[in-house]
Length: 68
Image (cartoon, rainbow, N blue to C red; front, side, top):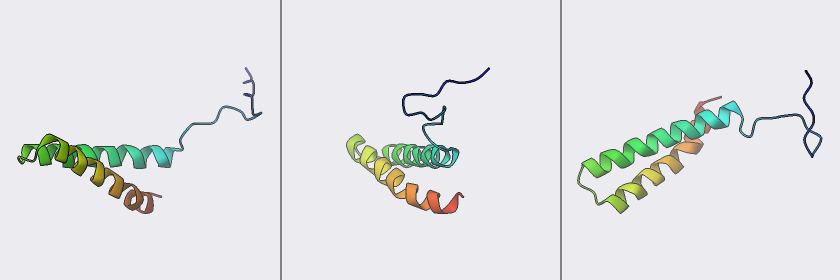
């Protein structure tokens, strides 16, 4: 069975590479842990969300360099 090319002429390629998926999932996990621990520590919810987002954003370039 052959696959038909899409509009651009390329065959089915993944939207994200395996490397990008692993980096983003690990950053998401780090952000959830930091945000959850912040909330459990008594930080108001909006600030805990910001802490989690900041940690996830900071983790992406670090993980990109570590995971090759």
